[in-house]
Length: 458
Image 1 (cartoon, rainbow, N blue to C red):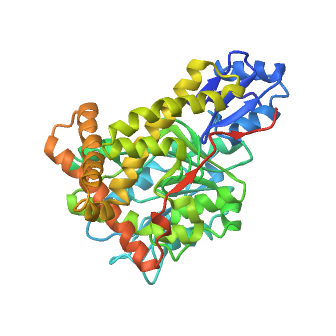
Image 2 (cartoon, rainbow, N blue to C red):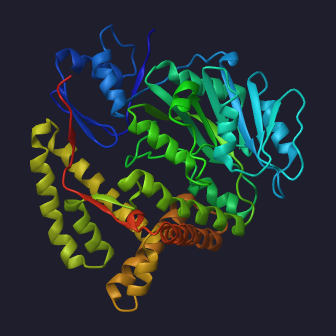
Image 3 (cartoon, helix red, strand yellow):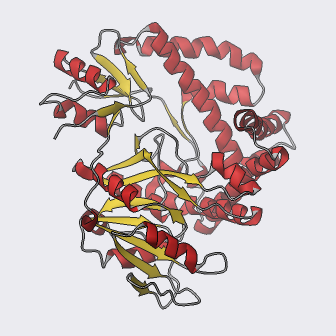
């Protein structure tokens, strides 16, 4: 079957055409003359000749290139599992509306012991006698699926039958076992809706990616995801002990087993936004509490910061306000990467751009770690060190001001308040979870020394 591939947005082709740096994390490829021709076709989004699989398989596995299948999977090959708990803020009308949008697919609704029993004519409804959580509800539905593909859809998601079928089509690549779409927050006319239109944790960017720990897209939510039924069963389904983070755990287990999980942002769905600031804070706090449990299962994959030491030192100097240290370090950083990447075949300008991207990303991620995981420590130390206080202040203020300039929200002070509350709530949850699990591992950074992973010649 003919297929076109899209190059990753981080795609650096050497001037000789035989070297490539791309993917997430960045990976180096050295190719033959035939491989160089295939790279050109990928860049131009053209059909590929026979025999491309050896190279394109490696590109896809590294997240350097991304296929896109346009022929939807037949509806009778997909079953949708919807975990549902209809409490105070959720009602049957919303669930009924979702079911109507998915008409034509097999649908299983798992009632996770709602106060009033869910009844939906024409839909298979399974009911728990006790509330067991979304992971357990999905597993209950999974046990009754007899189609090759299963779609897990939250009851507050907005998705259609066609989009579910298009997501399943991306598994025409037999190595892919899970596909998730881009999820935007629906506009609710309130402050939370305006903020989450730009900063929802369910929104993972506009670029396709392979989902794996410590990469650009390291997780996807189970709000909408389509999977191979047999693979998910063999993996044990969702961890029912986890009330939060069970979707992240599943994706990471699948990735650890050598499976490909893909994020496909060209397929867009929506998710209803938290209505009040209180619900917003509770959600972020809850997400934070899952970090320690995930850390116990997946080790350093949950680190708040993974950075290269060469880039981390100037980033810390800048955030601490030590400009007299930051500026002298810059020439050393650029010289280091320009020299260590000289064998890649990339031009001087490309190597300089890679270094700039790496440094700016490290500064941004370090500031994020300070505001989201380390702020309690920085807050205490700020009473004893002006530099620590400056780093905490800058890490909160600069992203908020940048967001104001970029997104131009109507509620300026509300936006800045939520931007700060976002990090504070999540970080508080991380510390509470760490105390409950009696482990601080989820708070520790991972510092590396290597710049690129090398791949053998293709």
